[in-house]
Image (cartoon, one colour):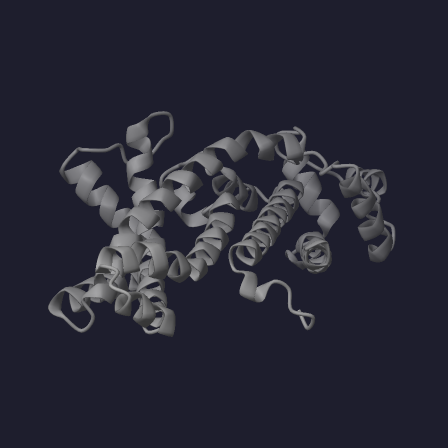
Length: 313
């Protein structure tokens, strides 16, 4: 077990190291001189060349790029993500302030997804090649095909502007969760339902299921005690990965519904050219996603001894 965890930690460390390179490069990939961009974001348009050079020296932007990266990494290892160029607040502090809203939306969206997907996938598998199965899979296909931003706008038009059942944006009450959670949960549910159906059909064809039926177990017992718990293993993996994505901030959905989470903070920072905040958000999202993937890998290995732990792994 510990060897397996160590290997996964090593892989996660490599991924995070790669993300730090991407996040650091963001400032240099953007058009314009980094010093001028930072000066404009911090002080406005009324700047002289001497002020820009002073800022370049103060921020260490006159050093070689590789030295700037090493210095930046040194700050990160001390959990110093820098200061926002717009608000002058600590980047990590602002991100952590947005994390609860994103975490709440992620949990509710995942629950919505599972409540829709599991019954749909199970019904599709149990009624294979029937009209019910075709209907469930058609709905899943529609859910996969509709982009989040379009579905979100449709839900706002229908439930907020037309029926006046839920608020179209904001945060603070249970009603505010309805539309963004349904937007995120519906797209996830579409994929999860198809995965549940395929996995359950595969398990139902296994020899031990045939043996269980031959021993006289009723279909309910065969389904819930033998088939479903094994069929849900890949579903658990997928749900864990999706939860990591949601924890990282569903950027488009949070922006559409003005949800005060990490995703909206990232979008606002991009428009404001707040590179320190963009770097911090990208890195924080990557770390959350990588850690959630690590947890899912470990849980999957614990739940399924067949993959624990091959010498070649």
